[in-house]
Length: 145
Picture 1 (cartoon, rainbow, N blue to C red):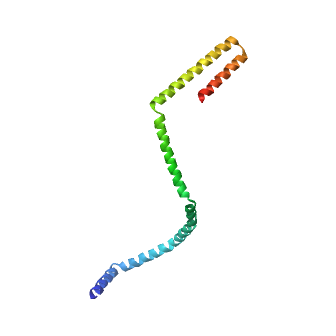
Picture 2: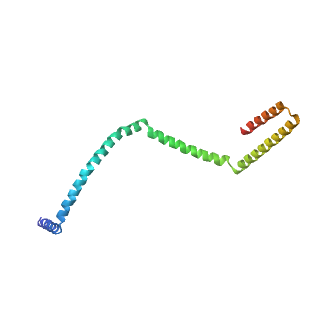
Picture 3: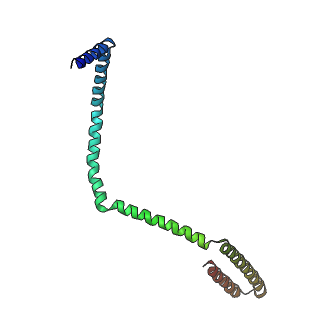
């Protein structure tokens, strides 16, 4: 016990000699001022937490989070499926076949327009021209589908 009293006495003398005690009190005052300044913020944070509790309870009760997670899972699966479809369907071979089909249809329509112009110049009949236009439009719709 005497040794403890000796150590405490040495510490007290050292603190007193190097203004340690004054620094300790200054630090304590700064901490006290800081706590006073933080008190309104802490009260506001507590109020916000009280307001959020019912909202979070509603979210949990309604299963909103579960629904969002489920939707996210479905979206991920849909993206995976679309990528798989693209990989499977849009092969180089299929793309080339589509290009060829479009080229053939374009040429066919151009030939039909030329034939229509030739018939129109030969017949000169407005009804015939109208019928040919109607035929070309119908064929165009078939190609579009």
